[in-house]
Length: 252
Image (cartoon, rainbow, N blue to C red; front, side):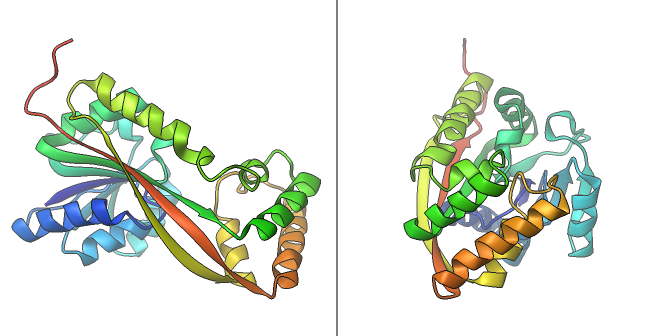
């Protein structure tokens, strides 16, 4: 099975992983990820028996994934040259919003075999409401322009509803896919204060912050977790969008 993963930064949904795993069990062919990030989801597909090739626009991310055992090619997905190769699945974890939804879907259709799966997913993780409010106050005071400053006060449906709609519209516009289906999976993960801080500063919007700002955020968020007992359980929802490549393009 050949799987193409695009910037996988969190665990793939059961639907996505199951589809890839079933294909891996049917054939020994290679699985290829595009936009592999640090390889978190790629490792799960490899564990399921898939061979994995990653594609990522960031050479630094590619180096991290290679050190962890993945094969990676450096390129933006829309511009990547598959050199005549074709794949059974294109999977994007936590990254399709960085890709042009129509051009990305068209590239996926170009490299997928007929019947192949395009699956894109996002993980929305939320601490308990009271703790989220405390985090929001810290961000409003220290770094109000960071996306997390808005995320902590967002409703459960807000963060990825718009990107899911854009992704689905892109798949339809590409003309090669079945009607996209939305899947949701709930799960939980416990965090200590230090584990949460380690996770938090890998999320979007933090990389360009001044070290002094990061230190102030860490102090404020850490104090909020300490006040809540030093640990908490975050509730996650994985939202996945899937579509199958058709034998031929739809007529306009």
